[in-house]
Length: 158
Image (tube, rainbow, N blue to C red; front, side):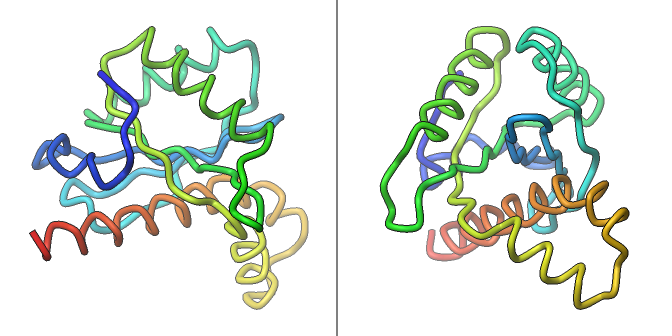
């Protein structure tokens, strides 16, 4: 398939199939799943990063298990809107996935996602140990929910 601007993914979202959201970190990948109507994001899991081939196999298994029609990857742009080395890393990860599997991929601005999730968990008085275990998948859900809201708005304007 291809890597698209998120706005261009609306024509490639298959009704009745969810999207998977990814928060790509250096050590972990936070994973979230949408409902089949692509309205609500739910944290799914956190994967410990390994070699790309192993990461891709784990993701391919989840994509098949949940019958996912596309991926939304957090786009780690800088606070000033510029793209740094982390964007290049995410772009390369997406390109490598496209070469291995037939899936649509879109990017969504992830600025402050981890900060927002951590703040919410602190306000909910969740212990630091539980936060550490959940923050990556919660950040993936935060990223995916932002993308779902954007896509829903585009479909409504339609």
